[in-house]
Image (cartoon, rainbow, N blue to C red; front, top):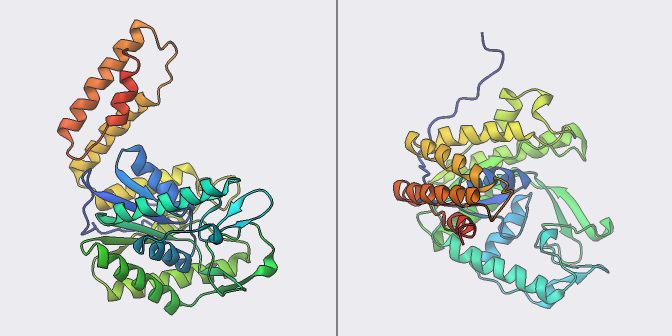
Length: 327
């Protein structure tokens, strides 16, 4: 007897293996899921402008990357402690203006180089509420805790969501015609405006994504939101704030992603790599001991074996890490 409703997910027409180049953009949920791919040593780029929650700000990021925009000092403002940019998450803010400027331009440049040969872009949308600067009506990715009077906040329409996503897809395909897109809605609830407006916001995203996929090729939907809402309908799958999902829920979604996008061979490879990475995270008690050198040599051999047997896998950094214990 099943005590939950299972979300049936058809096998994707997109195949992911270790030769794939993957880009993850969107909310904090996108960062959490992408971490599973990074831990398994897939080739990934995550959020070039930091966490982005809404479609309009996401389009700003893609426009900047595709135009290889060069930000200047005039694009920043000083809040008394840090120099901030409304197009970027606070992780790019810095007390040194030149460093902040260098960081954002380097990130945009790296993203363009990566995007031109990316195989699949995962876009996770968190909300359809958008903040606009009153001074120029431009959407912002982050308010940087500035006075609320500086902004106008509204929920965008289904057509705005769809038109924005279609524009993103078409613009990226001008640079990379073969790229594929996977859209998903973050299961993390935004309760600032209450349960009803959270549902309106998420529903708007669902309808906008559905409309987008119906009009474009090489675009699919992955039901992260539905897995949490239907399969994991229990607060034990939520974090202590009862809003964010727990690590266990994220791991379950990671498993469903593997079943959807990976062949059985790739799933087996992931298990082998994840087991190897546990050794990388192993805390070395005595770096100079013979036992540590034996442990390091064993893992160097294993890393080279994995690289030879899994096409596209790159363990250069891990091999270097263990080499340092052999000197």
